[in-house]
Image 1 (cartoon, rainbow, N blue to C red):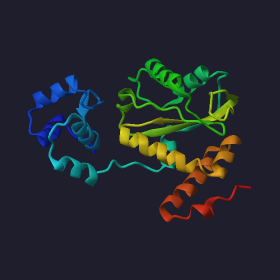
Image 2: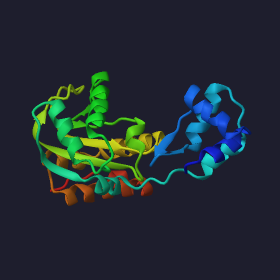
Image 3: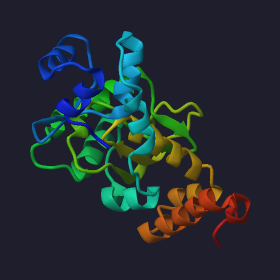
Amino acid sequence: MQLTIREAASYFGVNEQTFRRWISQRGLPVHEVYERIYLNPLELWEWAVEQGIPVSRGLLDTARRSPEELPPLAELLRAGGIFHDVEGSTKAEVLRSVLDRLPLPPEVDRAFLYSVFEAREAMGSTGIGDGIAIPHVRNPVILQLDHSFVTLCLLRHPVDFDAPDGRPVHALFLVVSMTVPAHLRILAQLGFVLRDEAVRLLLRQAAPAEDILGRIELVESTMRTGSYAAAKSTPQ
């Protein structure tokens, strides 16, 4: 759920002018969607607590009652796409190739977005081991969308990503999220699914997209049923 400035200001008992001043001067977290400003109730509550600003308890109740709907990972991947034989012999070249494939609206500046991802990599590798990397950012530039998605790129040639285990990367999951809570939940979904040995094997084999999605759907179903052990068998 997203709030307008007027709705958010009502929880603080202040006018919109005061609220806009907090945005510009006190780092109040906002998201711009098609030049309109929206706020996430949970982020707003956390900001108020950090700033010591009194706020109605109703704001937290609103956040709890209206958690952001987030599709299963398989659906997020269908929205973002699975691409095979992605070119690149260096980390920088691979990131450019991946960003070229993202289903972003025309107004998004891909060159600037690349610089954001490059800066994130400079802070520390997003390689997580076993030949997998998860480049991601939480910059508001990528939040100006009407849905979150995940894009999977399977590389033509493995590339060194300075991963903790030293293994070159052959599969990248690029996370594009609308809000910080959605971002964290998507990373949690990925973390669970990538524990599955069969999923990792399909990634190493650069298996067809529907094979990968089918296995991910099976693993995700165990999150709801609690039967993860039954889904651990490796595909033949």
